[in-house]
Image 1 (tube, helix red, strand yellow):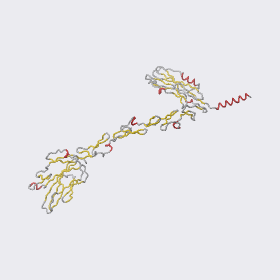
Image 2 (spheres, helix red, strand yellow):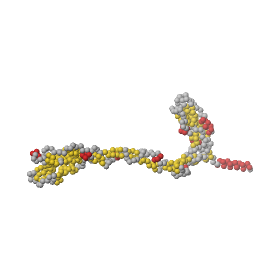
Image 3 (cartoon, helix red, strand yellow):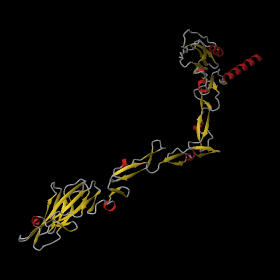
Image 4 (spheres, one colour):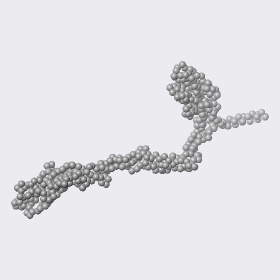
Length: 458
């Protein structure tokens, strides 16, 4: 009876022990490896990356499984990693890798390597494999290194529960995966901070443009701390902006300023010539003109400023310059009776076939003036009873630039019918013929008009 009771209790104890899930934790790795809590296996340590100046004497550092190699810079490496052929205990696998035999070569300057595989079994049904590699230099020296652990080390039995490190949790595939505290909302960062997820943890940082002061994130005044703007800097929350002075514009880097060539943006800024300058522009005028109101050109009256005419000459200003004309333009047999008026005496026999009087007039017009355009009016100064006046262009209109239109019995208008370009001078004789109604009296007078066309249209 007692024996039957004992067997029954032993059977129940065995059943209960089989139903209890086994917790297995693997965190021990051999030298040159470290535990990867995410993949739940040992991974190689890159000594060439973390060890400063790992190799001396001009040698190059070559990372290898479980260690690293210091080889000449001209060395070449050939690695042959074989697959594990048999299962042996874990300790034997490691020992086999560590005690791999080296083979020598008589070559010089080259490097040869061969791999010898060893394998082992770990508790829980996983397999770990490592291999030894032999590297030969020109000096017949050998270095033995191990291959990484087999990625199948994680227990294959899904009934086993694995224990994960802090910041990790078991996934449905029975591996440890990182907990994203920032997404899950389990972090304790302040509202003015940014949560940064890390492997197995998280960090609280101030957003860009802010710095931590005490327990708060405060704005960084980049304009005071490290002004990168070429001209004007304006601080804003979390950042800054650059602006340029008048006449400049921001370059593509949004920091520097480039001069604006106003002269290229528009051809109407200046009446004559636009000159670009750093941050601005200026207008220039040709000789004989001056700049007014910053942009337009105005003729300089040289007769009032720099009169270079002689005493017996009169100064006549025109658009863009001046000229000197004789005060007495009369030629024999004409005599001067008043300013610019020459009369041929009746007592002189030579005057019978000549105009009774010649009046000298001067005028200036701009180049490329629009046509048709009324430019000068001629009018009789003496009016006789029972007479008829007619007007004509006597000379100076060989190319037909002008036309004389009679506007009244005693006046006429000179019309420009062709556009003129300067600088150029035209001398046009306008004649008025006067006859009485019965034809017993006939006389004529001439107005000699000098027209100076300026070099520009202003």
